[in-house]
Amino acid sequence: MSVVLFRIDDRLIHGQVVVGWGQATQAGFIVLVDDEVRASDWEQELYRMGVPPSVHVEFASLEEAIELVPAWEADARKGIVLAGDIETMAALCEGAPSIRKVNVGGIHFRAGRTERLRYVYLSDGEAARLKRLSASGVEITAQDVPTVSPVPLDAFA
Image 1 (tube, rainbow, N blue to C red):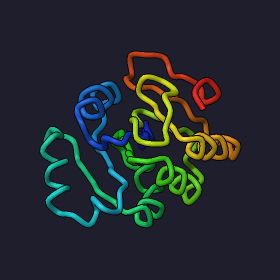
Image 2 (cartoon, one colour):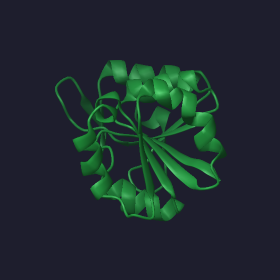
Image 3 (cartoon, rainbow, N blue to C red):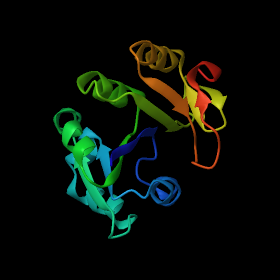
């Protein structure tokens, strides 16, 4: 089965991922790729509390994730791999070239970003980074929930 969703979402593990995407994909595991969370036991515990016991939760640094992608892709269970920002996911894709598709799920407003979709705000640099990743052969779409159609990168970046 392997990884069914590589997703960028700055809220990390939250209800929309667990309930919306987790149930729709029948995920048996969720991996959060985040160096800071990987180093914090109490943050890991907070994220675990929002996930049903039937779903395994794993935390990995970017470096660990690059090494572990093949194992996640070979897992018999379906899985979701999350990163909280574009740069982390882009580096993961570059380090693990088997990743061919990325979902942009939620990148919220902050200074320097403009609204591209109601749930995606990007700086010009972030949009350019996504375009470079796409040019390398990774399909990038935006989709907040699984019940709506994905939006191709050229429609929002």
